[in-house]
Image (cartoon, rainbow over the protein chains, first blue to last red):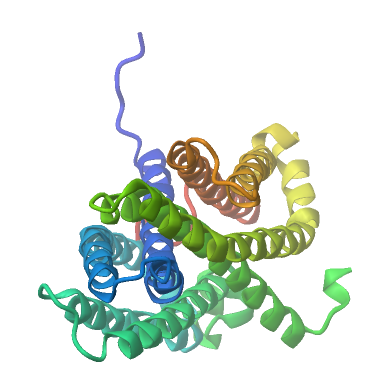
Length: 170
Length: 178
C-alpha cells in the first residue's frame, strides 16, 4: 500500500470544487425558497378556507424555511470567503473589472442576508414582509448576475487584464 | 464560428446565458427542496384532504415553474456546450484523449441532469399527485445536487488543463493558492 502523501495541488483542486459547490447549492436553496415563499405558498394556501388556518400554515412554513435559511447563510459566508481568498490573485490582475462585479456581489449579498434575518426574526413576520421578500428576490437575481460576471472576468483574464500586469503571465 | 461574433456581443450574451442557467437551476433545486422538506412539515396538523389540497394547488403553480426551468436549462445548457465545444476539442488534443479532459464530466452533468428532468416532469406534469411525491422529490434533489457537482468538476478540469496547456510547468491553476 502506498503511504499517504500530502499533495497541495490535489487538495487545492478538491477544495476548489467543494467550496464552489457549497456556494452554489445554498444559493439555489435560498433563491428557490424565497420564490416559493413569496409566490407559490400563498397560492397553495388559498386551498384552505379559514384565514387563521392559512396564517398558521404560513407561520409553520416560515419557521421551517428559517431553519434552512440560517445554515445556508453560514455556508454562503464560509464558501464565499474561501473562494475570494483563493481567487484574489486573479481579481487583482483584472482590476477594475473584477472588483466592479465582485464588490456589488458582496454588498448586495450582505444586504440580502440582513433583510432575510430581519424578515425571519421573531414568531410573527413584520408587516412589510411581502415587499421585503420581493426586494430580496430581485436582489438575489442581481447577485447571481454579478457573480456570473465576476466569474466571466476571472476566467478570461487576457481580455480584462490591467496593462501593467500583462507581463505577469495569465 | 464564435470567434466571428463581435467581442461585446460575446461578453454580453455569455454571462446572460449563464445567468439564465443559474436561475433555472436555483428555481428547480430550491423549489424541490421546499416541497420535499418545508411543505410536508408545515402541513402536518392539517387533515389529509386539506394537506393534499394545499400540496396539489402549490404543485399546480410549481409545475409551470418547473417546466419553464427545464426548458431554460436545456436551451442555455445547449448554448454553453456549443460555446465551449471547440475549446474542449483543443484540450483533448493537448491531453491526448477525451477521457482525460473535461468531456466525461460534462457528459455526466448532462446525463444526470436529463434524469432529473425526467423525474421532475414525472412528478409535476400529471393530473393526479404521484403515489409517493415526497420520495420522488427526495431522489430528484439528490440527482440535481450530483449534476451540479459534476458541472463544478467539469469547470475545474477545463481550467486546470487549460492552465497546463498555457504553462506546462504550472502544477495548479495559476492563481490558486496565492
